[in-house]
Image (cartoon, one colour):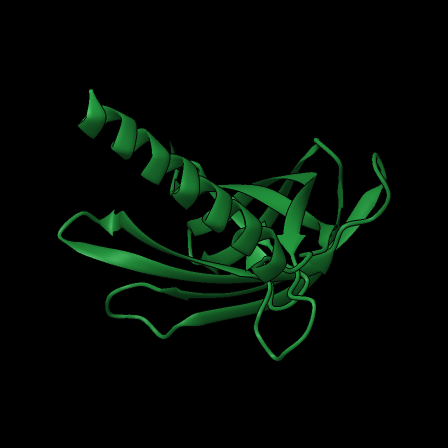
Length: 168
């Protein structure tokens, strides 16, 4: 009984001491909501008369640097996959309006020179838009894009040179 009573007293003392020390040490961290764009990207290829759709990928376009994707596609030759490097920049507009997005792409197909495209397009919120990033002979690659604006909470430090923390 004495040991249990002593343990309870120590726990109470530790709670009081830590409880008093923690609020004094904790600084107020301001939280702000930062707008970003979320793009759904689905490659669609046409080789002669055959069409093929690949898995959709999602990328978040941040205001401080955009967003990038690298796709390895088993096309046109499954034994020598093609590489598609994509970089997106843009700023979300008001809810339900068109977002202006810049797309920079480099498509590398085995045995061919890279095809580089730099385009600026307008994407309506939730609407599907097709953008061609590769065309040689009878082969074409188009990206099916859908944009959605999102708000992300960002915790800022009250002072110092630290970078903000982003929540996913």
